[in-house]
Image (cartoon, rainbow, N blue to C red):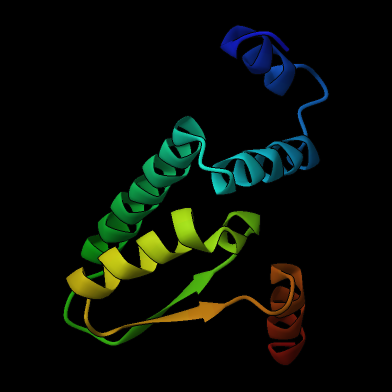
Length: 119
């Protein structure tokens, strides 16, 4: 790949898969760890977008002044320095009663457990 347009074409080329995006994220993380400013910016911008989304849901559910758990799920949360830590820091300041939980099992396992308990 020679430029951003080539990268964009590669990402959206069929078949579009989570694995392709996950592999790209790993490369971005490695390059960010080496100090690449653009890769660091990508992670930080995405962290801020996650914060905006979480705050919107918190407001809609009236959780601003309540204790609640936020489950952190997905490969991007493995990037602590430029992604996870930023999200946790900002949300902890804005929502002092929030608790962060790291997903230990696949979401489908929880869904199956709930389904069997409600039979």
